[in-house]
Length: 447
Image (tube, rainbow, N blue to C red; front, side, top):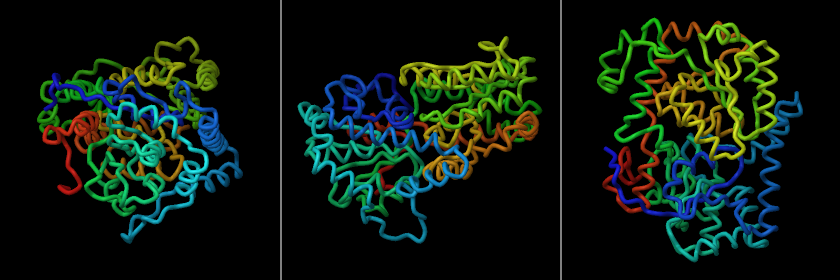
């Protein structure tokens, strides 16, 4: 049970502007953020030398992500890049605490360039708990002797060695783990078990509600859209009502709604055009609504609008096919969270959005980009909350078959039942040391 009247403990909430994942993880914690969420690579007064180091890393990441679609060369370059951040096989269990080259380079920048010292000195003037969604800022805080507690939120279902400090056994950095595999992985990397908390991923409070009120209401309206012939519902109605109660409604109240999301680097935008081309008849008839999330990418925004016109759906723009664009990322997250409440299917690469299956939304996964997304996709399939997309050119055919089978309704319920939902609340309570109040929470020593 979640109380509405909990006294909030303030913290420094620090993230980075690199793609969407780290900022999306920070957004649900904005109510805890002293002075607002801080962006480590773009805060007011950041030294030019620090900004240049951050920009070099960000520009290279976005270039590699976009270049991946170039035939032959794109995959070659990305595979080389991905190898440096790859996650090793978990089995056989073994000591993986030896720092990799990337970690050594990060600490060399701390030593030689004082990278991050300015930020930590600013925060140290008021040593609140520091909660960060990026490992480098956690390392900066420890390296430059930040006196307050340091917490790092893992933003994927498995993590590479780069997420752990140079000397993990001696580190004061504590981790908020979104799932059990991250716990086990961090221990293999040398993190002490007492420094890890199983919290779940921080989800937006406006999509959860007190006692899951909002999730249950939205899922109760969603299931009939995902299972119009009631193949799944007829078999599991008792279980559905046990968990959703009167929120479960058999009457369809809106058209089937699909939301397609591009990544932070604008990757896979072409897939959005293919989807609406295949579904154009059902979009034109009002049978299906498609939302294309362009995020903060002006070029992607225009691309989607051009594709809508190309496939002959220009007159339906803003009605049964929508393009959603905002110049500010946090405005984009807020709008996206609103759209999710009336979304029946989320179509995305298996990024941090994989955790949003906990909202009772089935996820159709686009091809993963990077080692961590391979693991996210595997996790979704393991808990039964995500299904790998078939050939998008024929989504007009296979989607109908999936709806008839009830697969997507089952995936919606599996995500709701199996994925952690209280990450935001748990993080809030842990930084205030109110451990007994946390839900779906265990320390690793209890796990």
